[in-house]
Image 1 (cartoon, rainbow, N blue to C red):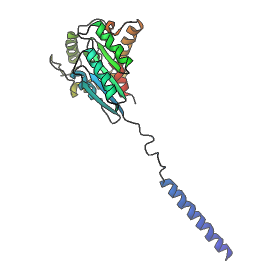
Image 2: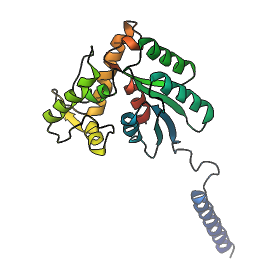
Image 3: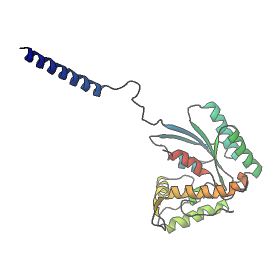
Image 4: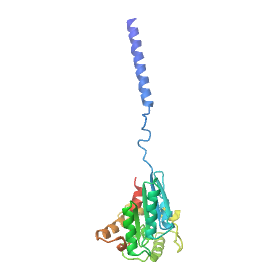
Length: 239
């Protein structure tokens, strides 16, 4: 009788332990539900025109919120002034960027805008001379040097034909459409057999050219052809 009672007691203990272990497995620790979920990053990008606005708004994703807006004043000073105002007025963004070109800005105005932005905590993605130079780097390794901004469109269209694309950039075309943006992300096979996206190639090329000019101690207005758009793109696609 004693042995039977002992076995019953042991069976009850084992059963209780199993129930406790099962309950622990189901239990969810408080405050840890979103521990491994990356917080969505937000970018306010003030641009000088619709081309840059349309391009950067494609970068919105489940992990990145992008609000690209064209400035009312498309001069370098106007873009930076608006970005500086926004950094004071709107506090919901993690990053504020100013995107503008050299175009018809004087060297003094171009450099002053750059220095003011950095002093106010606004990051800058400038292109000297034009944003189209950044697009061009997706197709050719243009080594820098002076290129009139009016020639970028023709150079781009020549490269689009070479890669077999039916896309053609018109003179009055201001926006980057979905087809062109998709082409910029497409992969190409390099001479060494490696496959790489055109955007990655553009980042590598733009960084190399910028660093070469930067090491020479040149000011932004002296850096032609140069674009720092790659710095903003790297931030947007950072995992």
